[in-house]
Image (cartoon, rainbow over all chains, first blue to last red; front, side, top):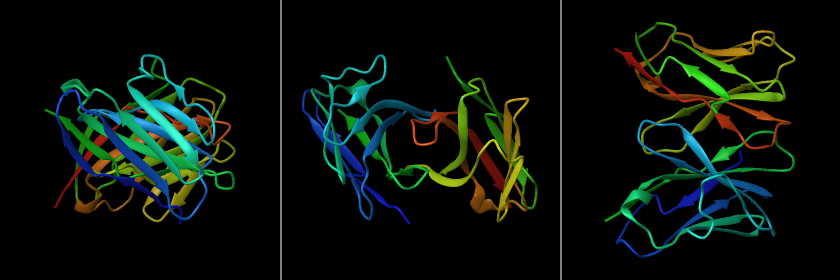
Length: 115
Length: 112
């Protein structure tokens, strides 16, 4: 089945630094990827939708200059949290869908802790 | 605006019981309704999904019931096991393939 690999699974960074999270589709081409944020005991909140080769579409309230998304190929999307602050600490999850499969495959998530 | 409302927020059942989780949606344009299972520290995994043209779908111990007129759908877990203890999310999307709107989640605990 479709597999999405997300890396790293955990990262701790200092305030003011940037962190990059990668999301790779291993056995299929992902024309569209989604990035979610999940706080403890809460649901997934969509941050942005990225389409290969074009600019990401951000949800209302998500700072595009802070959460940089790049989807340069059909198998890789990256989320960079710039100038991270403790309030950015959260669980970030990517998902991907393909042109031929109805459904979404999620990555295993990245636990970001900003100290 | 929460377009998919999920209940209950938490649920405790004994092993072998049948937990039922309910979701209601508002947008009649939704046409794809999946359920996801999420363990702590992991991403959601698709359990089962249904389209509005059927009223029920069963896969193994998991069953979705769908009521189009009431705009409601539910997940039943037959013969629940402690390993089913997880958080379950319902979701919906329009023109399957577009972004998912998630319910608030249900934390299920199955006691041995």
